[in-house]
Image (cartoon, rainbow, N blue to C red; front, side, top):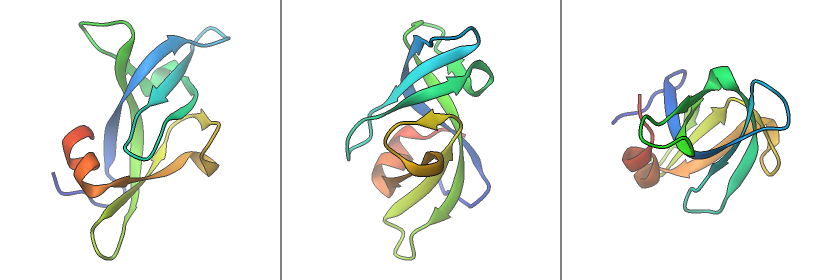
Length: 99
């Protein structure tokens, strides 16, 4: 998959019910560590086979000049990343992000 700024992608995640109705606690497992935060139900898509797995909507923000990283803004409020933005390695992104 070739990524471009502005492209909407789905990031695989683990999903748990959040503290409020219409909210989920999501956990993403990229190579660099774990990202955890809360997201509105409208941004989360549950997997048909498991109520504990699915994906969260994100937008590609930029690609690194050398093509090794993909920066995305993930819909939600995350504990360890500013403004919901995260860098994924290009290899991880190609293997995990979906259009």
